[in-house]
Length: 451
Ligand SMILES: Cc1cc2nc3c(=O)[nH]c(=O)nc-3n(C[C@H](O)[C@H](O)[C@H](O)COP(=O)(O)O)c2cc1C
Picture 1 (cartoon, rainbow, N blue to C red):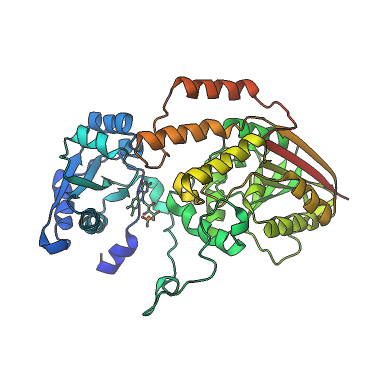
Picture 2: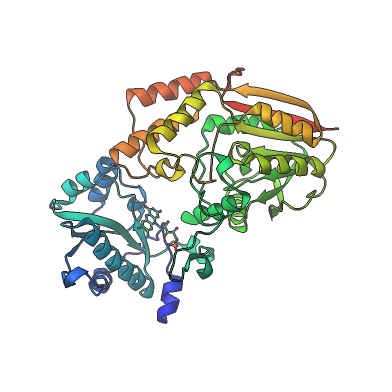
């Protein structure tokens, strides 16, 4: 491969075949790392190559490393002398990039991995001295066959990131992180999803939907019949819940998320047939003629202007007597305390907690506002039912917190679940609660009919 081809062909691989990576290749890849520049030519890096399954198990169990490392034949801890943190990260990262490119050149799949877990525990397990900084982990292995048809991750246009002489603020990119949908525009939502959704492989469920939240969906959509228009299916978490009598068209905010939905439908055992995987167009009045439309766990994540527009378009896309179904987490007292507490503790930045960060913003819904918007759009017979006083999501939120603590501040996905008396209690109480209706519930199902 030519040099620029290697750069373009490198991509993160997270699933590997059983084929072993020969040790001489691992050495060659690390050798490529040692040709990177370092501060004052000190070359103070070290590379710990882990192939022993028992050590990987310990990393996952004791250091809360991501379980992805169990799938990789070779795991490399990239270290650099930590006397100066900045130099350590610079030195380690430049070596790592050389290694990623060398792996690509040799046809070996690779991943740079930050979610390796708790530094202090890893240092104990791998006997790494205290003066070393763990810069990153790198996984190596031959790619699984799913990568044959995987499209590359989109890249930002150069005009977007290039500044001449002075930094220029670019409109629409500043408000990426707030929990409050009102601080987002449709453009910033699209931009965020375009890149963020591809942080992992196609077909992966990125949203965190509790099984009880899924049951609410299943119960509510089982009566759907005929042509259904589903808004913002995103990662297709619930596509397999649509009933056999439904013929579904999905619409997503950008082509990247539409591809996720399509891949999810292909990969799951869906009862319903899926007609089209469209990209949402805010400028059109109607998307065709449908028997029903659905907005599932998304109303709480849209700026009001967008929500209003979607409801109007939905109205125009339904036949007379057609029904809209909205399922959403609503602003019950427990959810609101949680929402404000998270912002208070971690700041108004969804990336810091990762909670519901995948779609973009998130704020439990004001259902009276939705009723108002539905009426404005022309809907009648608005019916609202609330479920689950205790948000089922609390079970996951607590697990996230435990993982966050155990991994010393790393992210929480792909971890071995931590079981404590509190997690057992939460799980028990949420199971007992089941799908109990309550006017103070945390999940709302709204139905409305087109006159
Ligand atoms: C420093 C660094 C740490 C990363 N950590 C993780 C990780 O912990 N888990 C993971 O699945 N991917 C991780 N990635 C991979 C990114 O998600 C990936 O690079 C990004 O989605 C772009 O895709 P590409 O590598 O295929 O171009 C990491 C990437 C970098 C550069």
